Image (cartoon, rainbow, N blue to C red; front, side):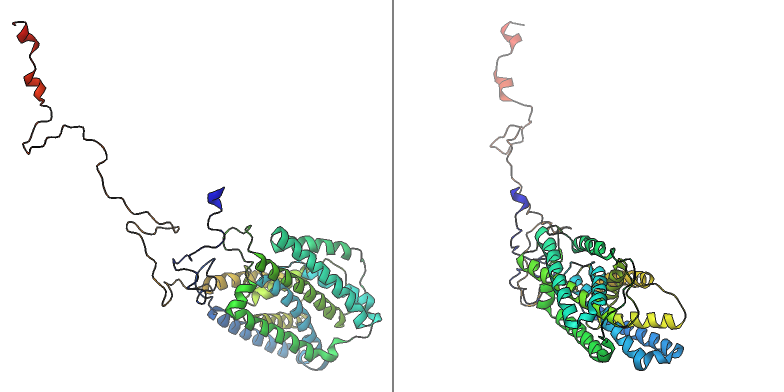
Length: 410
C-alpha cells in the first residue's frame, strides 16, 4: 500500500531530528539506526583482559611443560595459531559483514582432506583446484544471501550440508601426502596472520570502513533490502571468508598431527565463530576490536596445548561451546557499551523545531498542535442583543398571543 512505502528511499531526517546531510561526518549511520559514533573503550578494556588471560595460561603451560614453548613444539604451536587464525578471520570477516558463514568448518575439513590426498602432486597443484572450488562455492553462497536476501547463517548452513555430503564419502583417516612442512616457515605464517588480524581491526575502526563493511546489518525490518552497495560488500566478504577457510584447512592438515580424520567439520565452525566472538566482534555485525581476534586465537590454542600437557582430554566441541558461550556474553557487552552515547544535536547543527502542544511522545510520534477553540455549533438558547438578562424559558409570544380561554369568554 502507498503509506507502507513512504519514507523508505531516503529519510530526510535522523531519529534525533537533525537533517542527515548535516550529520554525515559526525554520525556513524546518519540515515539509519542510532545517531552517534561507536565507542571503542569497551574493546580496549576487554582486550586487556584477554591479554591478561593469555599471559596466565602461557605461564601455566610453561610450568607444566616448558618444552612446549621451545624448538619444534613452539613452531607447531605457531602454525596451529595461524591455521585456527585463518578460520577465525574467515568467520570474523563474515560476521563483520552481518552474514556469518557457518560453512567455514566443513570447507576447512574438505580442504584438509583434499590436501592430504593430493599433496604429493606439489603445493601449487594441490592448492589451485581447492582455491577455484572455494571461490566458486563462496560465490554461490554470496548470491544466495544477497539475491534472495536471506540470513547468512541459514544459507551457509545449507552450503555446509552440501559439503558434509562430500565429506561423508570418506570413512577412514587420510594420511598427508607430500613433503610440504609449514613449520619451516612457522614464524612467517604467524606474523602474517597477526598482521592481517591487527590491520583488519585497525581498518575496521575507521568510521567509513566500518560503516561500509557493516552496511548489511539490519536496522529495522531484517527482511528489508539494504541496497546494492551492501549486497556487493557482503558478497565479497562471503567469498573471501570461504577462501580463508580453505587456506586454514590446508595449514591444519599440513602441520603434522597425523592422518586427517573424516567428520562434519561443524566443530571447527563452532570453534572459529566462538573465538571471533570471544575476541570482541559483535554477533550482529559491524562492531569489533583491534587486537581481540589475535589474542583470542592465541588464548584458545595455548589453552588446548596446556590441557593436553595437563593430561586432560578436551574435545573441540567442548572448547568451541565454551568460547561460543563466552563470546555471546562479550557480544552483549559490546552492544551495550559500544553503541553511541545518547546525545543532542551536533555542534553547529540547527536545533529541531518542535510544534507546540504535547511535543514528542514515546515511539517518536509527534502530537499535532492543538487547535484554537472555536464556536462552530449554533447556540440552542435564544440570543438577545441587549445586555438585559432574560430567562431562557420566557418567550414574547407567550404574552402577545391571545389565550384560548380568553376568546371563549371563560
